[in-house]
Length: 335
Ligand SMILES: Nc1ncnc2c1ncn2[C@@H]1O[C@H](COP(=O)(O)OP(=O)(O)OP(=O)(O)O)[C@@H](O)[C@H]1O
Ligand SMILES: [Mg+2]
Image 1 (cartoon, protein in one colour):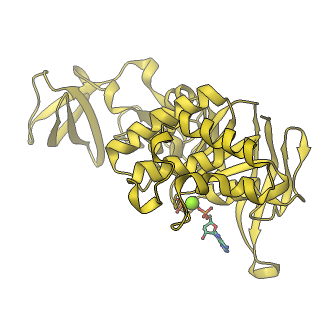
Image 2 (cartoon, rainbow, N blue to C red):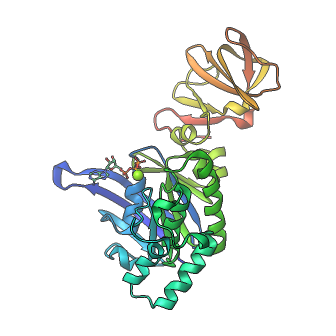
């Protein structure tokens, strides 16, 4: 197990005037045993970052070190990492046991040692009764666990996950999230986990890296990114429905953006005037969509509260301490 550090890491694809820079100087110090989630929309550079740590992509500038050792020029096999991809790529003609054992055989690990490691991983992942099956005889979730088992038996310093749950249905995804957390508690292996799903990020991470167009907008605990988003991008990416970002509401000066989460808005006779356009019932809560002048605003209320209906005019406000202020030019948090 090891700490992992990224120092001003830059990635350019191509060379010369046609070069396209996609990672713009990312720095992060990740402690030994930490579980870090990299989250952001499609194309923001999550996989590129992970693949540079793995050694599958060259680093254009900056430094990556694992356990205090700079790995920029090391082959993937020399980095002591194990990676789990979205596409598990199990060998179809091999049994579960052989799939998990394959990497160790190649590395010439002695046979009794292989058996010990595979059995231990199978026990942790509850795959013991499936070791003789072929991948086609497994469910999606079981295949995913075999892919994890293949990574575990390597006993790496660092686990790298690239959207490993995205082929699973919602229920299985939630279940596997819990299994991954359990696994991390048991093994304590430093992990970097990539996803575009903010719920996955919030529930799995000890700390989250939020990527925005190749830039790390924020690196913090789930509470920090939710309660004190560093930019309007983070504010709108983390949380569903997203934080309201208002430029023209009463009290907002030019050059400012006011952020307020839907759950912090309450009916209040002295507050802003809102034209209600649409109301959605989501079981325990209701989402009220409306407008303050030209700007759209979403409020989340308890389903039991007396709801406004489309066409109503209501008044709402939020407590002072729940307001977020951003610079309209840079998008950065000011208060
Ligand atoms: N081999 C490549 N050559 C040129 N550009 C690339 C290459 N691989 C990725 N890119 C570009 O780098 C940027 C980041 O890609 P990356 O795959 O890291 O995104 P991502 O955040 O993982 O997205 P997704 O959620 O869709 O997987 C994108 O603009 C992509 O087009
Ligand atoms: Mg990707």
